[in-house]
Image (cartoon, rainbow, N blue to C red):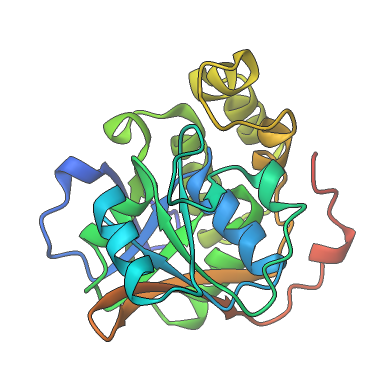
Length: 244
């Protein structure tokens, strides 16, 4: 895959294929890490600290008792939240710091945290992410599809949708969202095979441009910290139907 615009080259890889030379990266986890993260910011979270594993998440929390720890899977002692946009949607996180650990998304983000520009994305922030890349003047981007070692249908669909946006197209998001809605991950969530799921998770993950911010990750005091990144307004965003 590559943008038609010769000024923006792109490629899609899985996390195992990263080699540390990526200068601009967009780490995608549609179901559910970076949909959950976007909802956390919408619900008032100040920042999200990304942890490599459960032990690190709990260690960070021990040093910062006011912070909230979040992980995927079923609720576990020591963790305050689960990796579910449906749950986070109803949680007041005003001014809070969240520590997030997931199986795929946070692992991918940690792999590129030292890149010149590293963004975390899902459909809910797709347009803002594309605008952030354009605003940064990036001439190439590596999309990191984190699910299933780079094979997750929903992550690949999101990468392809953003690639079209970067090429200057205005694609119909419907077919891309349908690929996500019918993906194995979506089936797992609907069937209850993924623990810690909420009945609304799939539909929340296939809303396009629900939020007008991108999400940038970088190192702060030795920790990988995700923060919302406001982008220039996009005139059509208010007119777009989120669920197309």
